[in-house]
Structure formats: structure tokens, C-alpha cells
Image 1 (tube, rainbow, N blue to C red):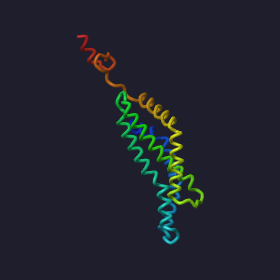
Image 2 (cartoon, rainbow, N blue to C red):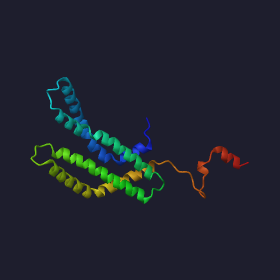
Image 3 (cartoon, rainbow, N blue to C red):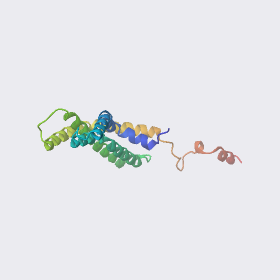
Image 4 (cartoon, rainbow, N blue to C red):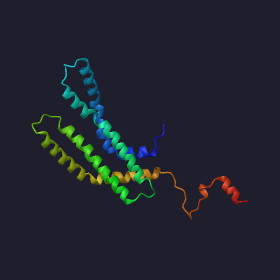
Length: 183
């Protein structure tokens, strides 16, 4: 099965954001399914609100991953021209930074909410958002380096373009065209 270049580009572009989203889903998803089956078998055994919240945190990253891949496909459309305009890569950087922020915020909320806390939810979300913002601001060099690597990979895998006017096109001609020249 051959993966289209647009899907490869989107997956590679957002790989650092997709992994932290999908690993918790892989770990918490089976528990969600098991608890849902227990709820169906014995509705009085579990509190429905708790199960819904748990499954939302466990399986919520799956639709988010689909949306991130759709964003990656849009980014591919932006930068697939040869050479891509600088504004297109600035837009890709902005999207990558936003996706990294949201993915890191999800991870920080998940990790910091493991223990019991007396902190009100609004304060907790502000604290974790500030922590995430700090991580993303300090991680900007890493994001830019990652985008440069993705750009190099995409350019290396991009098919050769047709020669422009004035370029030698002997390597792109069909053998029949070359034979017709000799007549």
C-alpha cells in the first residue's frame, strides 16, 4: 500500500503533536471500552457522569488527530509549489505552533491531574495553560528545526518538475521525439 505524499507530509509535519495525543488514547482507550461494557451490563455499578468524562479524556484525542491530519493536508497544499513562498511556511509555522500548544496542553493537563487536587478547575486550567505556553515558547527553536527538516524531506521526495523555457529537456523527452529530431 503506497501512502500518498500529502498524507506522508501531514503525518511527518505533525508527528511531534500526534504522538503525545495518541499514546494516552492507546493506553486509556481499552479502559474506557471495558468500563462502558460494565456500564451496559450493570447500569447501577458505575456513575454515568464519571464514565463519560473519562471516555472523553481517553478517546477525545482520536477526533483531534483526524483534524490535525486534515490541517496537515491543507498545509501540504500551501507549500507544495516549488519553491514555496515564505508566507506559506510562516502559516505552516503558526499552525504547527498552535497544534503543539494544544497537544502539549492536553498532555500537561493529563499528567498533572493524576493526583488529587483542591485547586478549582478554572485556576487549574490557567496554571496548565501558562505552563504549556512556557514550554511552547522555549520550544520554538525545536519547532523551527523540525519544520526545516520536514521541508528538506518533502523537497527530497518531491517528483522532478518539468523543465521551464530555456532549460535543456533532453532527459524528459520520449524516445520517439528524439528519433523525430534526427529525421
